[in-house]
Length: 194
Image (tube, rainbow, N blue to C red; front, side, top):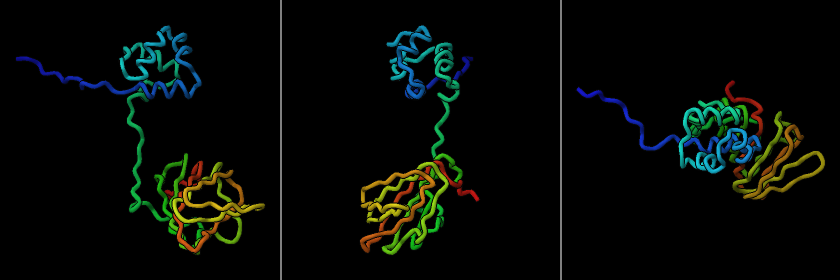
């Protein structure tokens, strides 16, 4: 009786982009990696384009040079999908604002909020701060003004505004029309899991 063995898939696991990303994140050129590993630049380039597969020993060597765990090359990316209909409603103090958390509740690196704002919506009369490094907003539709201690900035549909975290500010919808705004806060000031 003939033994049945599983066969490998016809396509190799694409690892080239992860290797290239690790190399460029460290500011290393192909020439530097080639010199360190003794491999040719042409071979390394083909590996990064997934045109050839390195041996296990070569792969381990590349990962050591790039300070990359070998397992990271084969791990599935941590991808989270948040449907608008399922996004939790939150209240960050905006008046007449339907605010939803569009990033996963436990995400600590960044927070994405979507605000559907009525024509008279505002962030309050007093300036407030958010405990983060950077805050950015993108106006999808409508217009609003963002008021800081020393100035006011008008932000219209299609515009974006980025400013330092912890900068005292507030906002207000302008033009008598509703607005939709996306807010990106880095890092997330709270995980939303409480």
